[in-house]
Length: 431
Ligand code: CMC
Image (cartoon, rainbow, N blue to C red; front, side):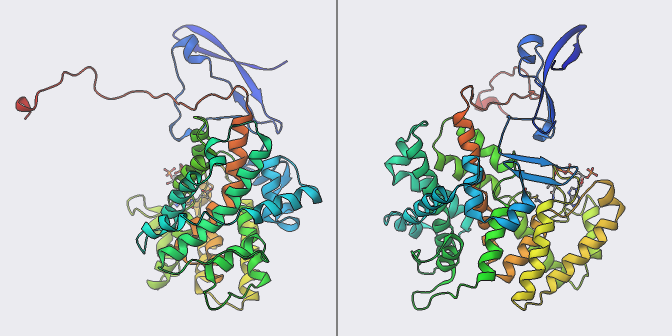
């Protein structure tokens, strides 16, 4: 028998149903509370609010567990790759050989952008942030494609095409965004390269000379994509679901996700971590002064790459990334002083009562920036890399919304605390 919650308000008792997830997560269903009692629930920042039921990703923040469709992130990081994991997230299970080939072929087929999109890229000033270009151009891409604009939910074959277009083209757009923001000529994708190698080619080759594709570089970047592929109801994914709930098209929803991801508290944190480490290095600090400032609420500083809304333990992605970081730096024979500062910061913070009491641990962004620096990816591209990686998760969440027969438009309530009825004052009478 399912449990019920009892809530007493104004002398009346309301019975609320409870819901239990497949991993034992418990929730009180308050969806009827306003209709029955006149009360809404108030939860600033949604820290205690479940916005949906989902079958995609499971996180246990206390134990540091992350699973995509039930498979542990550690196992995927070791045995899978980004494209296979993308398929897993979107379609619900690992692909067989035929399904994987069809998916990869579709990614190859749709990797070119419409030629006329070049004119849109030309309109951006040199120096424009690649996240701004990425978001705008994902949305613009839908205007060049009838299938995306007119596609109705329920047409499975068309969904496969639209998905392949988005996953493939986001990478082409991302590389072009970087080239454009540096005033460099655009480089077209090549048929002979797989997904991640092709991205590096479009980013770094010149019209005269192809960038040398090193397997260790491809592997490290592919792992970063895979580790970012989904993370349940975070700020950007909730944004994608919010937009999708109005039945906007997939590209419009994903473009909104890019904007939500851009901020330094979310996908922009990897860029902010490197900027923080560079500042510490420039000031000749070993990290101790910065830690003191991060603990002082008046300093305006935070230890970037630390803390998480859900993880109150080591972020499992951070463990994998830290190991990969050591391997990449060793393979590429790079000695980065920022890595020493990062390690010192981590060691000091994990012993410091401020961070211990608040359960603040390194998150995925703490070491990913150091790897990307070693791969010579420019710092403003770090959130863009995050966006490419997160695309399968956004698509999987979009699909979940569309497949839910009882799906409603997302529309939270509020508690109004502004002025009560207030007469209009004509301009001449205003002080
Ligand atoms: N440095 C110093 N203090 C911190 C930090 C930090 N990085 N993170 C949280 N705190 C403090 C915070 O000031 C608060 O202190 P108090 O209880 O005294 O008021 C306490 O820890 C609880 O923090 P919170 O702000 O309630 O936590 P939140 O769940 O609202 O925010 C967060 C989570 C990730 C935005 C926050 O930890 C943060 O700003 N971290 C730095 C930015 C960062 O690394 N973001 C990447 C997150 S992982 C990638 C992703 O999925 O987006």
